[in-house]
Length: 606
Image (tube, rainbow, N blue to C red; front, side, top):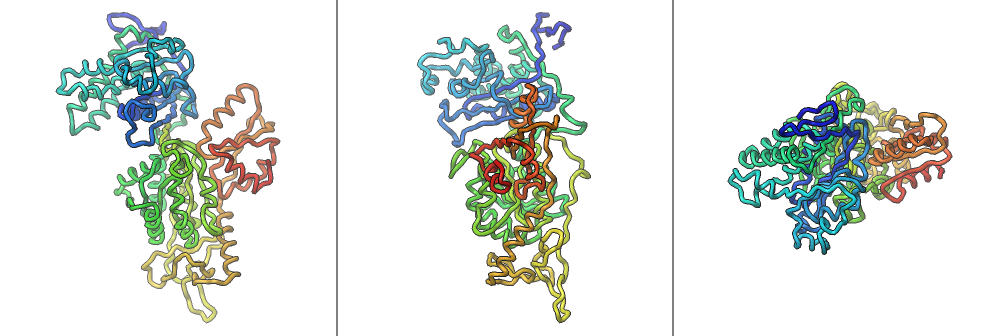
């Protein structure tokens, strides 16, 4: 296809189709859980990333393993926002909705603004399918879609027709309708197609006929857009050349970035990486990914339950590994006693909490940001734990490296608070150079570190480094470094069991002082004019929406300052001074005000 100077593309037979240039587009693919919407969205995202657009995604799927087909609870969707400039969110309202059945249309139509495009599979709009979701009359005939640019396409029929040369049943051929839809959208937005064809051939390498059937359906969708009169316009969104500093980029999800961050941290620490985990949505992808990297010395243990997972991880920390356990809110509740044990033992352990909606089982596939107080205080006794939170999917890599730095340097368990939105969402990520990563190497104890009054040299497991208050890390089996561990209170220095109240008071205070003394960067405040009286302060995955809102306000002439917290325990040293600098501080959170509660308590500000 060639784009002419007047913005029209030469189509078949010399006819011209209009090409409109846009700066941003939001597309939502929606269908039944078995329609392959996540795969379709992921492939369109990969095409868009390779083209050079900035992007942000929002996968959305049911919690049920398989909700009844064609019902509202069974609708799965994938939203992608891509642009020729820097963007921060997956968008609020789709410019294009691809609805594979009546349930997908009904579940999503309320989000679609007037004038948007709707592409739907007419083959699925049968009386029975419409009755399942409460349509008495077809929405294609009752005038309810008059405000939209509607494209009725018999996706299943066209796909089956395209695949009639393959030895496939109508049902099996119809399963490739998502690839037909992907081809059509790839034509509409001038997406590169080579990577998708290569992906399909690799994915179905053991079933070459299925691979070629999917490639054929994909090409048929592209050709349909090229030849049909219903799609007279295609769109171009230029690469976001100004949004990215120079470097090598790839599209990455939060869980994948976090996994890579853990591997990188272990490599920089020259330690084996050990994951003790129990599968739970939305954290399981980390277990799946790390299990692929045995070549980097990664060991993964899928335990029988949450308690066993963290118990094994803590044992690995005692044995000299960079130890990790992954979970979500319900799993944190089960792990709380062992987290307290890690506090008592003063060993490095990463607790990765991919937050989801609660309480209890709550909303397994929906995001929430409500485990902050649980991470801060969800243990018996005085058991302080550092808390680190990434702000974007790509930032999960850096946050994982930072959490490992704190755990190793200060000999403490560390909470890494991501959430389902970051875990499943994706964006471009600049692959860092190795020398950009911090040196995390640490020295294990090798011999005696204390001299008694009579001159005898001994090993004291709780003798602390003055600059960090961290105790020595002694690997079991090292001659002369035998020491006692366990959850009963230790005597400072010797590590012997102690019931002395004065010693317990000292240990409580020194454990807290060790956390309070962690070196974290000062809070960076974005206040371009320097005269703002209102500060918007966020943490975690609210970064995208908060920053987008602040940009809109500034574009409208409002003076607003913004800051975003990565370190939630301890807070940056300058946070109190920053809060007092502004007349009003607004704290948007996906909860009822947990960070706001902590700020009020610590700094006595409204």
